[in-house]
Image (cartoon, rainbow, N blue to C red; front, side):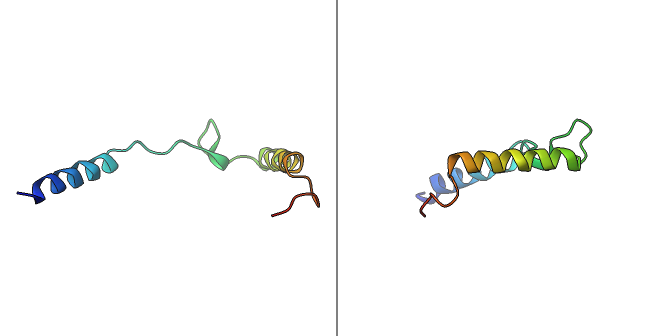
Length: 64
């Protein structure tokens, strides 16, 4: 009898994982056609990310 609540909780937890929606598209999967991003878009995203990192954590001034 003491195992029944545990088994019920485990079953409900596993059912929640099985019915989860697919993850949202991100990164190279941002495209209307569903294909990979173009090299120009990838380069612009990388450049923007590097600028943001440099503004938040200036080179040679950040200690880890």
